[in-house]
Image (cartoon, rainbow, N blue to C red; front, top):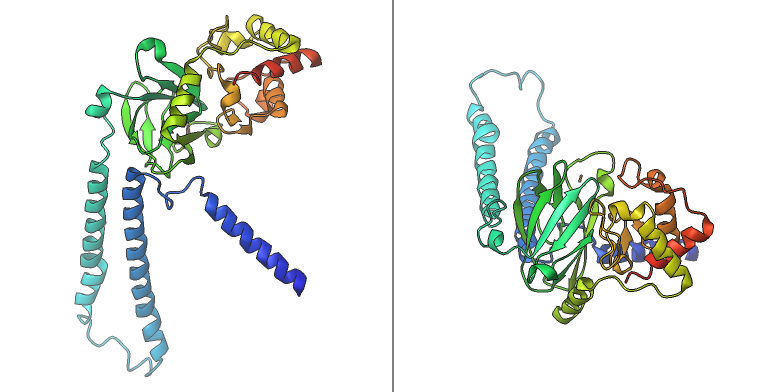
Length: 339
Ligand code: CUA
């Protein structure tokens, strides 16, 4: 009995703990846009639950009466009850759906996504969707201060951030449920989205438009930092890559720049100038790799270099099999110094 109780308590504790983390849910809004959407969502859930309850009462009530014979209930007057059918089957649904439709349009009008007025004049960040990762370009300040990162956006708490949303290939959809609704990233088209976080935290998002084999592994994270922490992060990211420390990291840096890595990836401040894959200048500062697919640690970095096609089939990252064990360790040591 005692064991059963302790299992129950642990299960409940785990459930609550899982609920507290709320990494990706429209039901736990954390910004003005998500608040509006959650308000509409709750209104609809409560309204539709109330209608469902009334419907079930109308179904169960006549069954429970259970009175009279079939003869007594034979339809003697075909015209009877038509008013009820017209009201319940047509007038009432039209009224309810019209209310929901108008409220939906009103909520949408708060979030213009194309030709976004002030947002188009001063976007803070450009997010370009790729199969299957997110390129993030910070546009604050003059051009030399712009920099690129991938799959992890930092924003200052309590300040609206304008995002210019584009796609390099097919249609994707940018969705961080705790901060905003879904907005599509469309090739040869620019949409805008304004996000703002009320509290510091890490908000998980994903691609919400099917875009091919690895659509499900196209995650994105928005980290909302207190303003001073955000400024420090910004300063750190603007810097070119740290010089490799130690003989193994130096060999790793050499391998990176002379091998196939540099054809696709950029590490600012080095000879690696590829632009078709994520910028790795500050790779070690990110929590995950491959668009939120794996933790950013030694084992996964090594596995990603050598077996990307097993870990994320059809992604643009090929299996790099030319390095021996020592070379692979040197390379990963270097990558982990890119703070
Ligand atoms: Cu990108 Cu689904």
